[in-house]
Length: 607
Image (tube, rainbow, N blue to C red; front, side, top):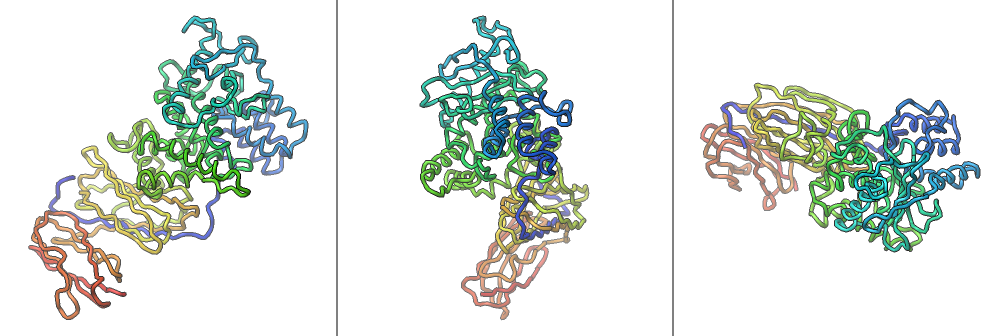
């Protein structure tokens, strides 16, 4: 990739990782509320016994739908909007039997009576009925110019967004159709729902024959900005309809199984379902980018969280975008098709064995692409590392990486330093480590990793001075290690980093990182790895300049038992596999002869 310099040195990275016995904590209290201080305080007060279950559920719904009804201590100025009201409704449905009749009646009244639906408009496709008002608290904006058809432009935009979202998600991508089988068009209500973009709910909560219905905000005044060329309001309409229609599709696909009570591994759990619905905002309306508001500072996105962990509701959408861009538009429909197939197979069983989201993703990767989940998980973090203005490079990673936040770097290492750290790598999380670039470094970069956790992956990313990026990934193997050997020329690298990711259900224990440069005036040879070995091992050597190379193996009697290389090689780093299957246990010597040097090292075969 780059030319060789006169005095190269090799850089060794030694990584030790151990697995702990404890399971990773699921999600800390309050994280699910996406930085909304009122909701976080409600949850904290419930956990501390300051409010009861009725108050918690009621106040959660007030926060999104009726914020003026909240007690003063939960009204925190400008807390920001709630992306989707479905989680609060699900929380209500899950504990409805435990609530007082008065609380249930008040919540059902909120859900049922937000609008009298005095007027309606059938979308151009005929698939959606848009219910709206032109006066009062729920009134849609009154303008009627584009087109002047007697219907408020806002209602026209909602209808157009519904038709467009349906065509893209159902007709093009092949997702389940929430409008199929009904005797009437799918209902969408335009209402003043406070600080909530929108929500999807069970049809029976409004006495409807439809399985579900959608509610979206009636004007989006004061909501975050987006980049839609038609303006923030229309952009918010587009992405909210796309988002909520995906929730309706999720129900049509597999009836929101696994959320009552919520199973955090279910595709329909809060975090997974919201990541999926937020993905559709980007897929259907790529130029709106409302999700930029949720992946930056103050959230829990893969970029800015210290744990770099998923799943994480709206904030974690870029993890879904990785699969979309890396494996194509057929990836997520295939995942949901597998979820649906298992759902139909298992729903009649007394103890149904439904697919978790990770199981569905893993099956699709293995069967459709021949890729392990561990490999994809590690690469997804390398994509996140290579983002933001500092690290993004054209041709690698996310299509919009330059617009994404720069990643939070957990720590850094110098080429001459040893750092001992003890932070755990959270389950489904990662640690991002920057390698300090020192101007005097030359030569090649080599990484050695040793650990016991088979669910840990190590990735190395190098940013070259010509703008290109190179990456190497190695997956863990219980009680084994590996080497990440590169031909990267250190002087041509402007930046480099290490990603330690953990795709397992347990958190990793402490780890040690060491960057130790080593060099010689001639040829460099490392100790074979592993050693002792059975039956194979790897021998690595580096050439500072072109040379004729002979690499041979001898027994203790001095007899040659194998010739591994006998050729002219250019400068570079080489790794040769030696197979001792046909040899007896014992000590052997490998001898490297170049134009400059002769080097002999010992190795042990144990069968």
